[in-house]
Image 1 (spheres, rainbow, N blue to C red):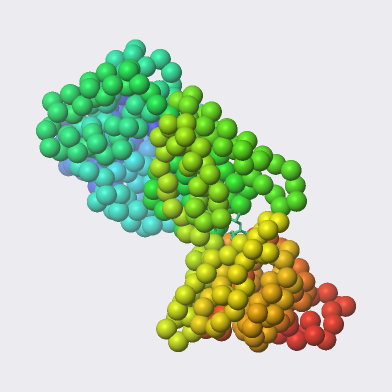
Image 2 (cartoon, protein in one colour; image 1 turned 180 degrees about the horizontal axis):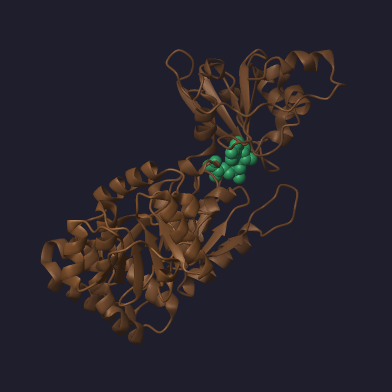
Length: 480
Ligand SMILES: C[S@@+](CC[C@H](N)C(=O)[O-])C[C@H]1O[C@@H](n2cnc3c(N)ncnc32)[C@H](O)[C@@H]1O
């Protein structure tokens, strides 16, 4: 972070403004809006500056700047067209350890002024640390259109209730939950419909209700396959509302970074081959937290109901009579196929899609291979890395040709994504040659031949070791 963001209380505090042209007039108006006691130093004073100064009874020195002028001020603003004067102001302020902004001169600034969206008392400040002011202004324009014009009044109303809510709801988390419940759109709707009185009534009723019950709740949330851009809006809302986030190992750090700052993050992940929380332990923890009144986001890779054991967690919550909501996510097959440009179905190549797991003692033994052998169907195989050989043998034995095209997508949708293409017969060798590791998605079927270029090109594939065999070299040529 190049600059520390802060909002300054300038009410009745002396601030020095050097310069009195049109730019200085804008700065003066903003400083006055914040209640600053501005002193102006400039040899010539423009009419707009003179008008504001007259109306507010400000002190104006009609002479050149002197370094001693900075003394006794909390803040300095230099808005002259003379670079030498601006530099002298910055130097004098720096010597006196007073923060100084020189308009349009980042080098001489010890603080900068953000682009703002003003819905006082609500204020949104945007800064690009001086690198891209146009981008900051564009963002401001977007936020301007997105933020309701009366949201400031809503914030002021909440401010009036703050003490009463604090007096009745002792814990910080209860208060946060109370306000989150109102600011999720409900208060705005009532305010738009019935004005301040309606909104006050809603706050009072909610406070009475909140004192009676404060139930916990859970969200079983799909975080998608890795790319944080694939999160749904609902997933983000649940992550922002939760006190605790119980997350799987596969959930990317970039996704976890989007959680509320003070939320407790608990990894309950299972690493293949390592001991970690059993599913029963996870169910128990989930139920215990929600029963204790916590808002828990159970964050899972992909979709919670696709090989995610979300069904078992939903069952546990349901049996305990606890409230929960399922927020679907983009499952790995869908996310990986899109990232590799492979359509999972296509009128010319596949009319059905089967999602299978290669994991578990019985998983591969219990598959009805004969039904998966005929062509014109796509198979998406999860958790299959350690069983590629068995998968290939079973499918070919039941009639799926060894020439059937396949694609392996490792760490799909992430910056480390690798996409390998080959045939079913080559599958175990291909995976071994390229040291494919979980998480990887195996797609089998004619559609994998159709891979279209995507905007995000996969990262380059690691070079193979020098000892590879001739067959492996041939397979290497099939990499995209
Ligand atoms: C326990 S399953 C969870 C599936 C998840 N619930 C879903 O809907 O995608 C884990 C398997 O999903 C697949 N997977 C998850 N994320 C992946 C990714 N980014 N790239 C490739 N495969 C992925 C892998 O096959 C991995 O072994």
